[in-house]
Image (cartoon, helix red, strand yellow):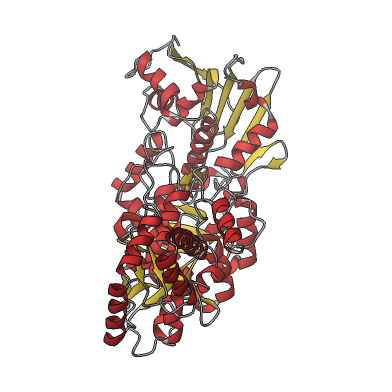
Length: 611
């Protein structure tokens, strides 16, 4: 039989398919194994009602052979096989799929239990030309005594000739290309490399994949097995091996969903963060399988950004794939799965928080910041889902508590959820501004991460209780008489306060008499929407134009001896008073966790005042 041209496709189309559709050449093996699996599926399905098949489930297999000297790679199956006409119609017309036709025929016949067929696009076979200079397909259809050989070198067309094969099935023989400076095609003739690709992409194909005397694939994935057969220890072992973590996961989530979109999932909440989790190098996403074949190693669309730490596997026959099966069509099915997974992860995190607090707190050390970022993302769209998962250090109870626990313990006369920011718990606890809160008998939360204040500002309130920084000008604790007394002191010392602002050369926007200081001489606060801790956060963030600055306010305790010394110096020695002002400002900076502008000048000032 003479050479025939591909009926519907030009050289340009074939070139596009081979060189552009697939991102990685190694995909070819996945595609050919999937085709072999489909062929066995069809004969196995027929064997259910046709005794003449003569094979039971244990007889089916896919065999792979290598010949390095001849540079051949052969994938064989004992499936349904193809007639000569089917070889022409399936392989001579690019993008025609025998698998899709088979599935459609069953649907039209009203068959309910339709086997899951992977290869529905009909282009996977041609991925072989990415690595092979010549492809031969020897096939014998079940029920026929005749075999046929289809041979092609690609765009030049193909031939179909009569041949011989002992039994029904198909052999696909690839003559692997010679190596070039850019490409090492010989890797596909190495046994270890082929086994590696089988484990990566086809480990859970339902039929044995045999090389020599070894079955390379594990066939039944752990997530497809009944829960009664898989212990939590089995799941944890799978997690550590698959996702390269030495620690047990904090939580395991198993999902077996049926309905408009059916899928199985095995998900894990890690207990510790990977070293690169908070860098751009970390790639979030779940492994996506369809019928045991891995489609994507990191499908980010299956997991929301705020739960990007979740690892695991999703296996669904219902997701819509593009023509190369490497990418997903962004469709309704995918969104249904992702929304369900989000709810399941939230439920598991809440269970850990309520039932296994120690384990949850360990998890929160690694991923609490991620939950706080999740509150801030998308203008707070997910804040209601995430707010009850947050933990903060309680100054009074000296442990991590939830916002629920804080609010439930609030006295009736407490109006706000108070918080203090610092570089550490000790620094936050030691702020002079916390004294009025303590004196009132109220607890406050210690915020030690730059994102904390932004997160609670996005929350606004929790259970109708607003958040209030200890730096806020109105803590809701001062009586009218106390406010009036503070106003009088402000008026009496206006000239001195203006002098302090002038002496500090624009470093502060205001000097004022404090209504909050009890035993300390000074503290540094801010006016306007940007707090001192927000300023520090933006300072440490990657450069994005001009840094945001807080409007600094120096608060002074009018009842402290240091303020009295400042007043006297202002009357008798203005230069000395200016030095006092600089020293008090430097002390306020240190208390706030800010390095003084000129540490040398500050130490020289201290020494000069000691003379």
